Image (cartoon, rainbow, N blue to C red; front, top):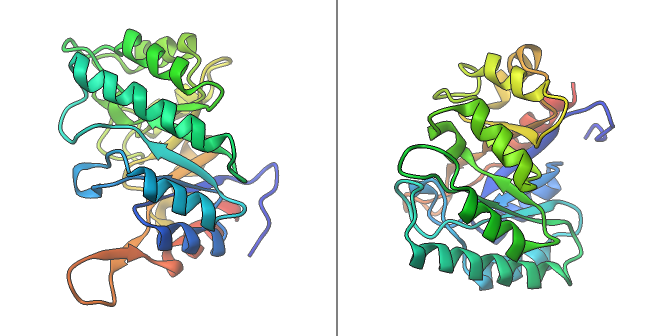
Length: 240
C-alpha cells in the first residue's frame, strides 16, 4: 500500500461495527467515522461499540458520531443534553485511547443557521477532543456563513458536499471553502467512490475524503459489511 505522505489525501471510511474498523485499518485508511444506524445517516454508537473499536485499532483515527436520532438537525433541549453527555463520555474514553479520537456532530436552528449555542456546548464538553461538524452544514441556508461561524466556534473540520447532493456537484463550493485562509479543514463527502476520487481532487483542492465502503454481507441476511477492496481502491486513488 502506498504510504501516506504530506502531499497525499487522507481517507476516512464510514463504519458501523468493529469488523469495519479492522478492515479499514488493514487496507490503509487513515481514519474511520463510527456510527450506528447508517440507514438514518448515522447516529451515536453505544459505549460498548466505541470501547471495542478503540481496543482493536492501533493506527487509524476514530471519529465518533454524536447524533441522538435520524431526521433533521434541529434539536430540543432534552436532545441537546443527551448530545452533551455523549460528548463527555467519548472524551473520557479518548483519554486512554491509543489512537486519535474525535467527535462528529452538528445542529441547526429552525431558520437553517448553525445552532451556535448547541455546537459551543458540545465543543466545550468534548475538550480537548476535536469536533467535526457533519453534513448538516449542507442543509444550512447559507453555506459560507455557516462555515465562517464554525471557525469561530473552534470546530476542527467540516464534512460537506459543498451544499450539493454530491461532492462532485458541489466541487466549486468545496474549492472555495478549502481556499479560505482560516477555518476548519474541509472533508469532502457525499457520493464519493474510488472511481471518482481523482476527478473530485482535480476540481477541488481538498486534502481529506470521506466515503462508505460497504457491500452485502456474506451471511446473506441483507446486512452490509465494510468491503476491503473498496477501501483499498479508495486509498490507492487518493494516494495516486
